[in-house]
Length: 147
Image (cartoon, rainbow, N blue to C red; front, top):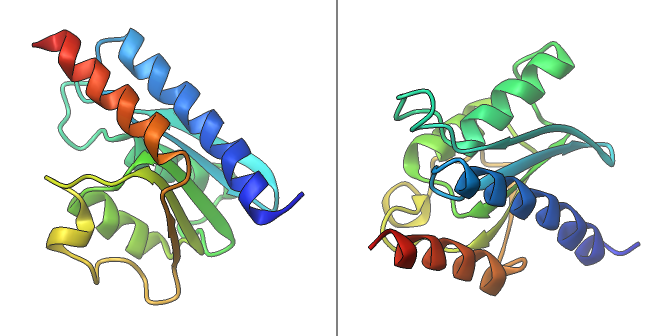
């Protein structure tokens, strides 16, 4: 399986998490952490459920992955997330030293690349645009229904 095929496979899992978030009334962002080809964490936004502005999908996934591995560094892991991380999540990604970040849709209003492009660890490899149209459409449809 090529890297692109793997990226699509795991992004589909992240999109499933985003769908779960939407069904729970959460902003539909989903995340999956993969280590050595194995999914070790799956998460979605829980900000409404937990009444916690920091309960983004990425934060939940990083916490679960660190717990699973028994350490704070995720330097052999890839985070797949349906929407470009915000500055807060990019900081957490940087501190966890993730090996790779893969995201679907860009966030032109709150994405880290606008506000904190150096927040990630210098060794973190970034791949963007994986299933970007599907990820963007899902978030846009959620907000269309809200309005």
